[in-house]
Image 1 (cartoon, one colour):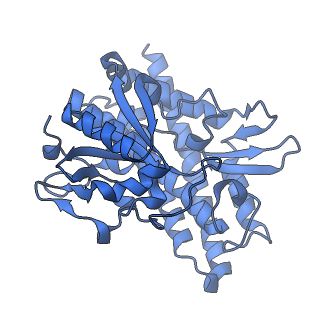
Image 2: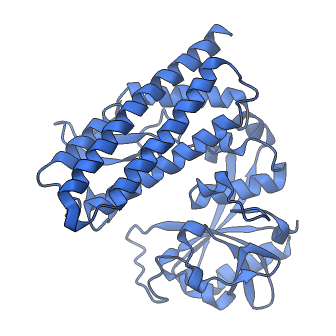
Length: 375
């Protein structure tokens, strides 16, 4: 396979790949493998849909203890198909360090395989939040994982693919055959690999691809997401996860007198975010990316599902994308100098998003009812 000739985050004309741009660092690499093995013509957005719901987590006394996208709460919510394709990928992981990781990657590249690697991103020189080559790494502490794709090499360099959203362009040297592929000296990755390098071998069943890119999975996913909106879920620790009241909980959080957007909050302990604004910005980014992916998946079905109920559902998804884009932009343009006006603008954007989400839930229910009626 000539991996240098493949499209990754954009095509030869420079147009962004809507699916790849909406996926996290692991799923984007799985997507590239799928396109390589099964072709680019399938509805891959359908397969890689993720939950676009916000989830509020409360303790047994009803106090808000956690907040975020349901994709990140999926370990506690077993009834929701979060990252639904992953269980059908065979991900064989080999955890290595230093030069041993380089040797393993070289061997797989020589065998004609592209290599997915999870490593310590704070030591990746092309990563936007690179700290230093000797950034401290503590194996006993949780660190953010980050996946890169290595698609080729020469004697001293690797050819790699990185998400443009986290790429430091100042440190990026594109490959002359494909600007989506970067070049880095093997020794430039060694500091990150000395912390750890988890090398993945990936395979997937073709029957799973048929299901996840098909109409049956679209219905199953929408039904599961609608159920998640309507029902709370109890975790083994006695906490309650609820999507139906997440927007009211978020609105109440922003309204709290002590919840200054640029200040600290109890919710930040889990995330490591420096302030409430940054924490919320991360959550809104996750929701918007998932919304865009769902809208893209539905758009691929419009010619094949022309009924009015589906058209209304697809339109409602596009309105939802616009509403959450407005929420994110409102938050990101808020500064300490206009904190109170920014808070009021954010509350107005959240109110509009809440109204759109109610209409979206109704459109989903109406479409699913037509599917039941037609058997």
